[in-house]
Image 1: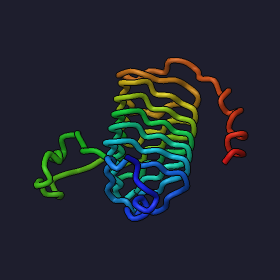
Image 2 (image 1 turned 180 degrees about the horizontal axis):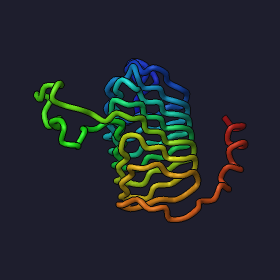
Image 3 (image 1 turned 135 degrees about the vertical axis):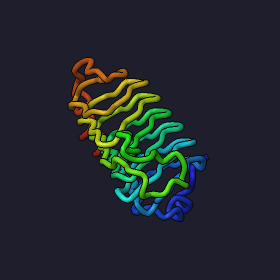
Image 4 (image 1 turned 90 degrees about the vertical axis):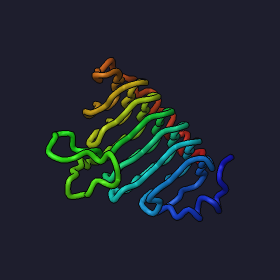
Length: 188
């Protein structure tokens, strides 16, 4: 079931737009650092955990079943973004250089650990395919698509389709959809 508007507001988000649909089976952490736009949907079993950088979710966004947005750095999902099922977006992770201990347990003292913390940005009209993983510091350019099962550790150029592991630029993507935006906005 979807949460009522009152239930959503009670959670304590930084801001909440209109027509927000959130499953009662989604989990949120650091809600005071999460901003929600208009006309968005967050499905069952999503985990959205905002660290110090916060999470900004724009308008007309869908975050599908089991997706995760996690990390200390800022995560931005701009307008008309689709995050497919079981996508993992990380704005921080352990430093794997070998110069520090990994955070395998919360019992490892912080002074022995080191983290990479960088923002992740999904610009307008982007889609991330099912089971893909995005690492800290990645920007997905406007209109870019990342295919299912992709591992993204570098930026994606606007209006291209990417896929795979290692990630490859596959082809240019049409911008024709942009013609619908003015009419859609007039309907709101």
